[in-house]
Length: 297
Image (tube, rainbow, N blue to C red; front, side, top):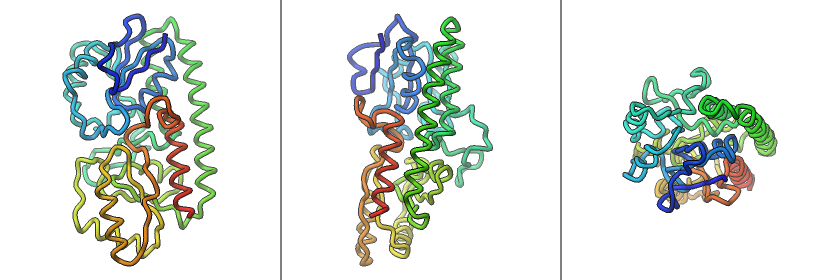
């Protein structure tokens, strides 16, 4: 039986002892596990809809969940920065921990402009690059349960095919937007890989982590750019406070130009479970439709 849990229902039951017990950090990773493991796994994702992984701190309940898992999958590249010590402790206790983004060739990663040796962790916004995370999950499940290797490999191939179809959809949708309109402005810089993969200029008021603060100068410079380039829409994020983007909108409007909030994008978390946006593919399709349709107005 396939069991799916998010942080909103984690107090109801524990991981199923009759399956491979998987703990994940984000919904994007959980979606991979569900698609590759299917009925062979039970999963519990610590960070549900609207949760910011940059600032997330493990609760006592989370530590218990991680302690009872057979495998822990997390993003890595410092996305879950405040949980690093927890993962290290779990590994020392003999629990398999896998950072799904840290197997990607470093030459394909975006380096942090602020911190030397650090990389942008938001790799899921390049569907082709995210396929590497699928390979990492698949390899870990095969290593843990080699008797069912062919099942995992087939499930993985099916999911990879969905990612290729998603990539085609994204390119086609983006190509319906004139290149001079492809400017994506959000609260924090989570869409760098999206910009690189799909030919968008991306500007985040904060850095790649929401732990950083935007200054008054940053806000004024961004509002000036929006006015000069007549950018019609900016976007808030489901896991980030809208206060910065609302402040940008007010600053732009005070300069005599009307910029709209084009919608709420999913950046560091998926939507509600049971909705299209509660899946990786559905989340990405929703984001792209929202971005392109708002900038096309």
